[in-house]
Every structure is written in structure tokens, then in C-alpha cells.
Image (cartoon, rainbow, N blue to C red; front, side):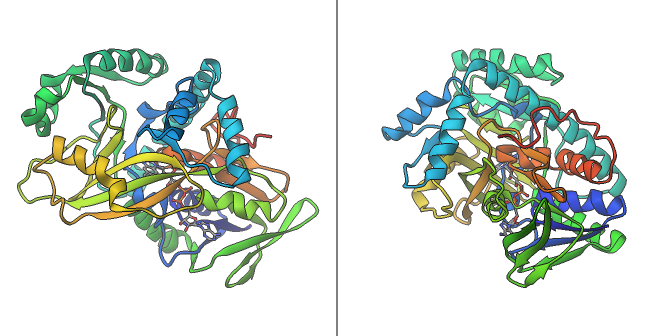
Length: 416
Ligand SMILES: Cc1cc2nc3c(=O)[nH]c(=O)nc-3n(C[C@H](O)[C@H](O)[C@H](O)COP(=O)(O)OP(=O)(O)OC[C@H]3O[C@@H](n4cnc5c(N)ncnc54)[C@H](O)[C@@H]3O)c2cc1C
């Protein structure tokens, strides 16, 4: 069975792995000259079932309203003459009830937990190196009242299988000495013991090598998919800048590129970009750097140590397909880095970029068959694609090879 996997990010490459292992003849098509260079290379690195909360929640509409009035909120929107933003936005607002937020969170949590189990098995089998840190993740609070509110919120995940500890400032400092000099600045943290971190791009590079060497997967780099050619209920070809490519099956794993390419075959996917800012700094030799990944829940900056580098990311901005950034966009990140980790890294030598998360209005990704019998969807992973990639890849590969997926697909199939 010949299969084209469109997209060489973490979702595409993990899908290629499971398909090739199941006997498919796989080619991955990627427009960049390397693999995992988009959202995969920019994320905070946290593998975080403990952060499964749906963005569409009862708090979100107020936040968006404040953002429109110029406030520095966690989720921001920049109004633009883009119909897709408004249709997507209306669907997002519909998901903002308490009941839907709970439902969507639990769908995401179920997928994240499954994905983590699949990933652990893959890493063990293939002895994959990706700068993993498996000591949980810290959700840090500056204010005691916020810590209490956060603890109540996190209870939903604890009730559904996440192991958590509530730590005061001195316990946080004992766990990760980087917080000892700044103890007075924090109220405490919730530690999710099941979370971990690692470098998604390194993971992709190493997994791609296994795919190529062991399973004969081909990687067609520098090929931009411009359209899907459909005939009745089948896809005939993926039209690319290197010509039309044909196969028996096609997997759409293009991140934020998925809705654009899908539309050429008449498929509408409710995926819109949420821009984030990502920075990477070299660790200072002998400096005091974080040893556990985390998120500052007040300043909304995530961090993790990726080998000899410190990654910090922030912000979710609905601003269309805009990868632009200015130094000002990183003020928040640098302020936090110098406040909590002043001695960790060389902040004069940062690498900066903006990147786009492929968001669905409700939060869970879109998996499986749409209206074409040989076009499989694996897209819309939003703010958690690194966490979800292995689970969604395994599930889509199972669907394509006629195996019953272990994951309950409720809430994860194409939505109308
Ligand atoms: C700032 C930030 C922080 C994040 N932090 C976390 C985190 O801590 N934990 C977590 O789990 N997730 C996190 N994420 C989310 C995660 O990075 C994404 O969900 C994940 O990378 C999505 O993977 P993907 O393979 O679908 O997309 P991508 O990694 O974007 O890959 C898509 C690939 O398709 C290619 N492509 C697109 N269009 C075309 C085309 N027309 N033709 C050919 N190729 C094309 C792109 O070049 C790209 O290589 C974060 C994201 C951002 C932006």
C-alpha cells in the first residue's frame, strides 16, 4: 500500500513511523528543506497531559474582549478582514460554556494520556534520544489565592488519573534549586508528576532516521503541496511544486497548512492559527538553570531545558497566517527569564521566532476519514501537538491498516 504523508512535522513523522512499521510504503512530503522546522521546532517542549484544559472556557470571551481593548491577556485577537477568523471565532465562542469546556478538556486529557503511553513504548523500543526530562512539570503561582484557584481547577485532571502534588515555595525550591534564590517571589506550584519534557525537533530527526534506515520511508523535502486533486470520493494526486504525486492513501498532517490544502478538495477544516512566541538561549556553564519544565500561570510563560539550551515560549494571538515578530513581543519572556532564572542562560544570545499552532475551536485535533475514502486527517493539534503526536499517529495508522484503535474516538473525528 503506497501512502503519502503530507507534512514533516512531529505529527507527520510519527504517522509515517507507525504506517511504515505496519507495512505501508511511505513517502513524507515537506515544503521546508528539513523536518520539524515549524511549530515542532518552536514549542515549549512540555509533554503535558497536566495542561489539557480547553482554551475555549467561560473565562475566554472576557479575555478576548479585554484583548480587543488593548490589555495584555493570555489569549489575544487582532481583528483583520479575514472571514475565516470570524467563522472560526464564532465556533470557538460556542464552546465557551462550562459544560463544553469540561467535555473538551476530558477528550484532550484522554488523548494526551494515551499518547504518552504510546510515546513511552516507542521511546523504549527504539531507544530514542530527545533530551527527555521525566520529573513532572511545575504549574507555578505567584499569589496564594491564585494557587488555591489553580488547585481547584486542576482537581478535574486529578479525578481523571493525573497524579499531582501541591507544593509551597520552599518545597518548590527543594525540588528544583533554581527557585531557591527567588523563593519569596512565588506562592507555590502544582506539580503534575506524569508530565515531562523533551526536544520535539530532535525527536523528529532521530525518528526520521529510523524510518529511513529501518523501514525505507522516503522524505521528499522542498516540495510544497499546492492542491489535492479529487475525483468523486477519492484523492487522485497531491499536486506539489515538484509535480503531481500519486499514492493509494494520503494523510493530511500539515499543521496550519492543512485547512488551506484541504479546501482545494472541497474539505473545510475548522483550524485557525494561534501565534506564539518562542525563544531559545544557550545555558551558562555552571549557571543555575531549571531542571524541571513548567509554566508560570500568572505571566503565562512556559519553559523547559532542552539539552544545553533553555526554551521559553509565550502568548496565543489570533492574527492569521502571520509569522512576523518584533523584539517587543519577547518582553514578557525576557522579563520572566531574568526574574526567575537570572543566572541560567546567556540572554544576549537568544534565537527568536514566532510560530503558529493549528487550533480547532473546541481543542481536540481532527482524526480519521473525511469525505474522501483515501484521505486521512491528522491535524489541528493546537497547543498540545508534541504531547498528542504519538497517540494520534498510532490511531490514524490503526484506522488505515484496519486495526481497531485503542483510543476512544469520540470528539476526535471530523466535526461539521
Ligand atoms: C509557542 C508554542 C509553544 C508550544 N508548546 C507546546 C508544548 O509545550 N507542548 C505541546 O505538546 N505542544 C506545544 N505546542 C504545540 C505543538 O508545537 C504543535 O501542536 C505541533 O508542533 C503540531 O505539529 P504538526 O506536525 O501538526 O505541525 P508542524 O510542526 O507545524 O508541522 C507541519 C509541517 O507541515 C509543513 N507544511 C505546511 N504546509 C505545507 C504545504 N502546503 N506543503 C508541504 N509542507 C507543508 C510545514 O513546513 C511543517 O513542517 C506549542 C506550539 C507553539 C507555537
